[in-house]
Structure formats: structure tokens, C-alpha cells
Length: 562
Image (cartoon, rainbow, N blue to C red; front, side, top):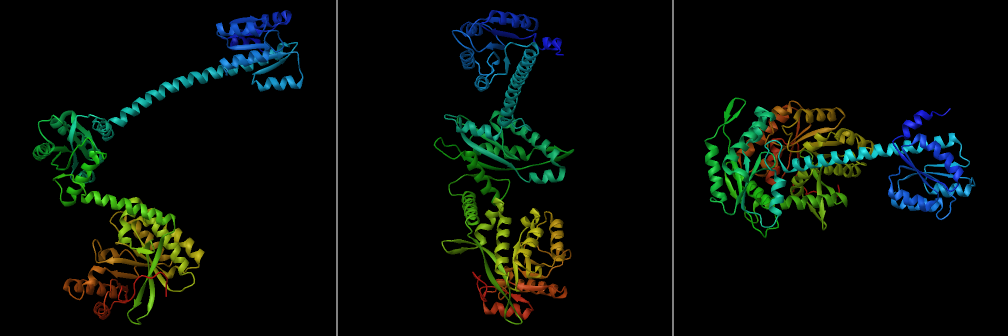
């Protein structure tokens, strides 16, 4: 039995429009609807119904199909033009499939067959009103959501304009101001805190943030509202056109004041200095002065810190940025169009005079000319593409040596160890190209950086256990040290070419080379001398006991192995 009490509770807040030209049928249904709904509107045909609909709030329509003046189909079309989501129930004495199909096409909520049975009508009303209530709830939720989204959008706008740490307007806000015509500023300064990374490293990032707040308060006292927060430990100052002091005078004023200022960090009074970049703001300048001031700052800091630098056209920093961008783009094209290839430089055994192995060197082919990594390796690091180079060289070198028993070496970088793909990638391609791991010599470029060195060493030891050989490249340069070799089972030491190139004329180069060879021989590590460019150099390194040599005296890098 249908629960009419629950149905009444469901319907009592809503209004309904009943449309039927038959008086007896209309009266029967009206009496039932009056018990359920807050208000029942009555119409005898579609014209009257449409007029009532226009004048009153109607939540639900219950309509006959066959009526004079305007039938049910026409009424539904007219109402849906005004409000497409109107809830409508159709009742009709026509039960033919064609009529039902046409009604369904109108997307009505229910179809009741006349003569109307109470249970059928109750079920149709319940379904329609429940759908109406869900729609209202969805609409209310959507309205609340829109209000919330608007609030969050406003909060986001505030966050995008204000630096949350220092509560200063940020760089993006400044850029918007400088993009506008007739802005009131003539010059711009960027202040970068010298050695701020050491403050973070020594006292922690929380104390570093507190220091930035204190520094911002110090600068506010000098320049008031013309101060902005830049990236990281940068602050930006704009100088108004009517200012009493120009940017240079202001920069020197800040340097004097900060010199005598002590900032409290973890109960310790410390002193800071600024490197400052200065640039004039031109109204016709297409490039933002912020970018130019950064270039001025970069040029200054390349020479020394705690200094003031001015922007000028064709600055070293600007040329450097342009070159990095150009070569990163060329490298991306080379990878996409398979123009990055290995060249193979022979490595000769000093005892036999024969080629015993090859070093696989990455080259970009540009107009049939091979381009050395000297041009593109630094842009590759900046763009995060070093490991893409390594992967490409591994595949192509493995293809070349798949039918050979010769050893070949591949340069491996810190980036390759940090990405942790190397072990699986090498194993996969050894299996694919039938390469014995003992054929592969992994040359660790520029030694191992101090960053995460333990992790890199653990990977090298695992590779060594799998049968790969390890060579330390450029040994003797920069951070190379003998203590590092105690943690790695090394097969080869490649002596840095800077010592080999002038070994015939430089006593220190000779002494360093002898020392490396002495250590290697007593540690049962083979040595390789690179940059052997003439017979005199070859004879010297051979006489010192170097095991292998490579360089243009013996052969240049080749497209194909001999």
C-alpha cells in the first residue's frame, strides 16, 4: 500500500498545474492533488495553462495531451522554451506506442495512462517531486559553491599579489604596474642577499624566513611603499620619477645602512651584505626592467659580491642566457630528429700499440658537422636533458658493439645517478643487444659531486657487482681526491687532460701525473691519458707507465669503429 502521508510531506511545499479539458477527469485528479500540494492551479486547455504558467510559480505540471486550442505537445514545447528543466508529467488515454515514443522524446518525467489510477499517479508524483527536490538541492549547493569559489578566487588574487611571508607586494604585482602606461617609476634595483643559502644551511629555513621578514622591515624604513619581494632572497625597489635620490645613490645608502645593521638570528647577531643590480626604466622598452636588473646582478656577482652593477646591452650574462637558450633548443631538436649520435675515439694500449677500446662521445650533427658537448652539455644540465643524452648514447653504442667483443666506455653524470634509472636501463639493453656487461666501461664525468655522493657510490658498486667496469674521468681536476677512491672498486683512472696537454713543459703537471700513476699502479688500477696530441707527449706518458692513451695524435673521434 502506498504511503500517502510520506508523499504529502514530500509535496506540501510545492505547487502544481493541472491541465485537462475533461471536467470529470480534471475534478477527480484535482481533489487528490489538493490534499498533497501547497497550491493547485487548474487549466482547461494549453492556452489557459500557458497563461497561468507565465503568471505563477509552478513547480510541477500534470497535463493531458489531447486538448482544444493548444494540445499537450504544443504546451510542453512552449513551456520548455521558457524553462527547459521544468518537471512535467503527461497523462493520456492514448496508449499507442507512437504516442508514448513522441512523449518520451519530449523528455517528460512520467507518463500516466487514463483513466488515472491512484497508485500510478502517486508513483509518478513521487518520482517527479523527488527529482525536483534533488535539483533544488543541487542548485542551492551550486549557489553556495559559486559563492565559495568567488571567495577563494579573491583570496587567490590576494595571494598572487602579496608575498605571504613578508606581506610585501610581489614581483608579479610589480610587473603588472610596469606594464601599465604612464607608471610613475624611472629606475629599478634588485637586491640579492649575499650567501643567504649559508644562513639557511646554518640556522635552518625557519630562522631564514624570520631573517627575511626582519630584512624586509629594515628596507621598508628606507624606501617605504616602493619595496617589493622578488624570488627567494631578492628584494626589488622602484624609484619614482620625482624622487630626490636616484637609484645609484639609493643603492649606496642601503649599503651603508646595512653595513652597520645587525640582524638577530637564533639569538645571534649577524651582518649581511647585498649585491645590487640597477637599471633605468625606459617607456619604450619591450623587455621588463626586472629582467635587465637581474642580468646586471648576474654580471656583478660573477665578478664579486657586495657590489653594485648597472645593466648594459650585450652584457656577459645576457649573452650567456641567449647561448643557453639557443643550445637547449638545438639539443631538443637533435633528440627529436635523431641528430644526437656517438662518435668513437680509439683508446690505444701503450704496450701493444693497438686499439683496445673506444670512448663513445656525444655529438650533435649540424649541417653534416659534428658539434662537441662543450657547446651543449651545460644547456643540457640547465634544461634537465643530460640523462636523455646518456640514454640515447647507450642505445646507439650498444647497437654498434652488439657484434663485437671490444670494450667501450660511456660517460655517466650525476644526473644519471640522481634519476636512478641507470642499472635497470643498462641491464635491459645488455639483454636486448647481447652485450656482456664486462664490455661496458662507465666513465663518471667530473668525478662525483658532493651532493648525494653516497647514493651515487652505492649505485656504482652495484653496477660493478653486475660486471660493469668503472672509470673515474678527469682525475686530478677540481674535487678529485684519492680518498674518494677508497669507497669505489675502480678499474680505470683517466688522468685529467689539463695535465697531459702540457706535461712536456710544466713540471707541476708532470709531478701530478706521476703521483696519480704511482697510486694507480699500487692500487691495481689501470690508467688512461687523454689529450695526447703529439709524439713527445705520447712518449712521456708511455715512459711513466700509463696503460692506455687517447688523443688526436693517435686518432680523432670517428663516425664508425675500425
